[in-house]
Figure 1 (tube, rainbow, N blue to C red):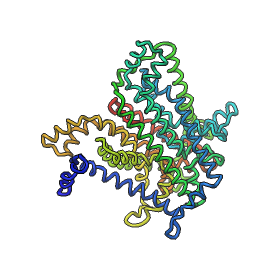
Figure 2 (tube, rainbow, N blue to C red):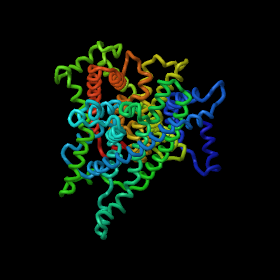
Figure 3 (cartoon, rainbow, N blue to C red):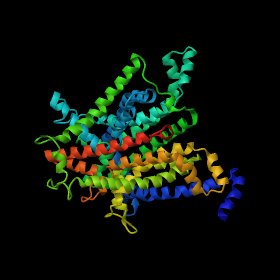
Figure 4 (cartoon, rainbow, N blue to C red):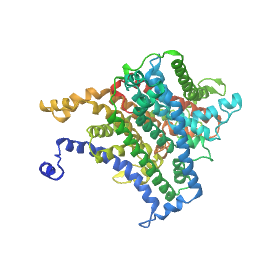
Length: 565
C-alpha cells in the first residue's frame, strides 16, 4: 500500500498522469492470465525452440539461414503463403454476399442457417478434410456420379478452407454491417449519388476495417492450416504447420522444426499486429444503430435472387459436404443402417486400447474442464482490457490472440518437452489436454466478452462504489447481470473449439483416453472399410454436438452479445 501511494505522489511530476486504483486492479486482473500464458504457452514454445537452436550451451543461429536456404523449405514457405492468399480471396468472394444477406435481410430460418454456416468453423480440421474427401476424393460422391476427383489438386484445399472460414467473414463483417445506419446511404442517394457511388463512398469505407480484419483472420487460419492440408494435401502439398509436424514427429529434426516455428511466429505476430490496428480503427470511428432496425424482408427480383444465390452457396459449399459425411457414416457393409455406430462400442478393430465410443465421453470431459479454465483466464483478461489504455495493454491484448496462430503442433510437443520435471511434471496427467485446449479457447472468450464489458456504463460501477460496494460486489451486481449472456456464449464457443482441438492434442492425448478428433484421425489413417466407416460415424457425432451447441448459442445471442465472432 505504501509503495502504491509513493507512485501516486511521484507520477504527476514525471508524466503528468495520476495512477488510479483502476491501474492496480488491472494489474491484479492480468496476473493470472499472464502467469497462465507464461507457463503453458511461452515456456513450452521457448523450450522447443531452445532445444532446436542451442547446442552445448551455445546458440546456433546459423541454422536459420541453413534451413531457409533449402529448396524444399522455400517451396513449403511459398506454397503456404500463396494458398493462404488464394483461400482468403475465395472466402471473401463467396462469403461477403452471405454477410450482406445475414445483416440486411429478415427471412424464415435465419437463426438456424447462421448456426449451420458456423458449424464448419468449430469442427476439427481433420473432420473437414474427411468430409471433403468423402465428397471429392477417391470413391467420393462426385467420383461415383461423374468420375470427378479433386483430392490430388490444390482446389480441394482451397474449397475446404472456404468451407471452414465462411463463418469468419459472415460473423465479423455481417455483425458490423447489420449495425450500420442505412439512412446514411439513403441520404447520399437523395443528394444525387447513384446506388453504386453511395455504397462506394458511404458503406464501403465503414466496412473496410471489418473486411480487412476478417481477411486477416482467414489468412491467419489458412496460413497455419494443419488437418485439412494433412488429409487433402497428401505428399504433394504441405503448409508450414504440416512441415513442422513432419520434422518433429516423423523425422525428429528439432533444429529445422525450431526454425520453422520462429518463421511462423514472426508471420503470425505481424498479421495479429495489423489485425489489432484494424479492430481499434473499427471501434473508434463508427456510430452504430440497433441491428434489429436494419433487417427487412427481401424486396424485388434482385434481392430475392441474391438470397437464392447465398442459399445455393451454403447448400453446395457447406451442407453438401456435411450431408455426404452423414451418408457415408450410415452406408454400412449390409446397406444403410447404424452398423458403423454399433462398432464404435467394440475394440475388435484394434485401433485403440478402449472402444472408440469412449472418445465421446473423454472429449466432453476435457472440453468442460478446458471451458472452465478458458472462462476464468479469458474473463479476467477481458475485465483487465475493459478500460482502454496504452501500448502495454494493447500488447497484452495481442498476446492473448497468439495461440490462434502459433503452431499448435509446437505447443503440444513443447508440453511433452517442457512439462516433464517437478513441480510441473504433467507428462502422464490427463490435465495436459484441457490445458492445451484452453489456450485456444481463451481468445474466443476475450473477443466475445470484451465489447460487451466495454459497453457497460462506467457510471454504474462508480455509483456502486460510492454506495459502499466492494469491487467484487460491484462486479456481481453491475457487470454480471449485463454480461451473463455474453459469458454463456463465450463458454459455448470455448467448449466447441475445445472439442475440435487437434494439433496439440494429437501429441498429448493418451492411447487409453483418445479425444474425438484424435480418434477420427487414427481411424482414418488405418486401412479398411470398417475404420473408414467408424471415422465417419465419429465425425458425424462430433458435428452434431457442435451443431447443437451453436443452435443453443443462437438462442442466447442478442445485439449486445455479438462480440467479434
